Amino acid sequence: MQLSRPLWFALTGAMLGFASLFVRPKSYKRILLVGDSQLDGGSTLGGRLAELLRKRGFQVEVLAKYNHGAGYRRDWFLAERLPAKLKSFNPDLVLVSLGGNDANTYHSSSKKAEYQRLIREWARLIKKSGAELRWFTPSTADSPSYQAKREKIASYQRGALEPLGVKVYDHGDYTDRLPRRATYSSGAPDGVHFRPTEYRMWAQLLNQGPLASLRPA
Image (cartoon, rainbow, N blue to C red; front, side):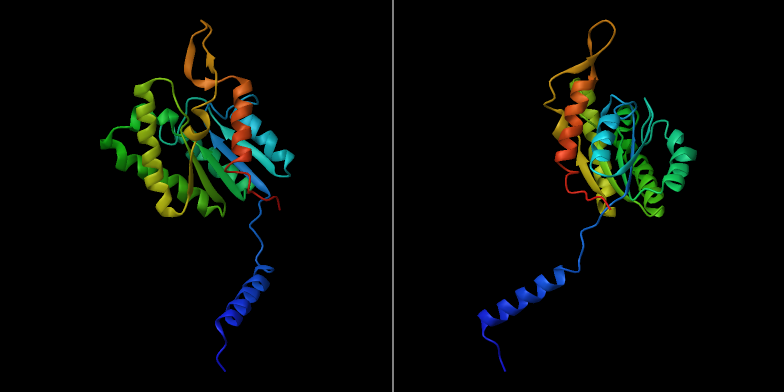
């Protein structure tokens, strides 16, 4: 017996709806934040974002170091601390926010292949632990020349990670309109960092934007 098209569509829709009852959205219990100075400290993006995620029911730990990167001074992370943290905390999800400190060293096209090899090394290490990896490219900088270098780093990161199925987000989408930068003791803006108020705003943008769909286990 051949079904009419309306009846076929109705039966197909019903079957898909029934199947969806057994497909649960992925959920997470433990989230590890990895980053540089933007995440290093309770009043930074790392501290503020961890606070918001904990309020949503996640267990969160932060592994961050001022003036370090995915390539620049990478051994601080890769030689011991990150493997140890992946083992002890056993995160379901790792959110990496690195690259700003790599800009001066690795922005040149002659360094692209080497840098992307290092980024893939990060991805392999994290995925081998069983955790999902999501990556955030560097935030915006006030200096046009430094910003251009950061944009190159961001493109290198995307080129290395997206073919591996890693979700890559651009921090620039969330920091380019934040109103105030942190300042040196002289009162001059440092061009990269933010004040606690702006870090809180940045964390809220991420929590309500790319991380809003995360479900606690």
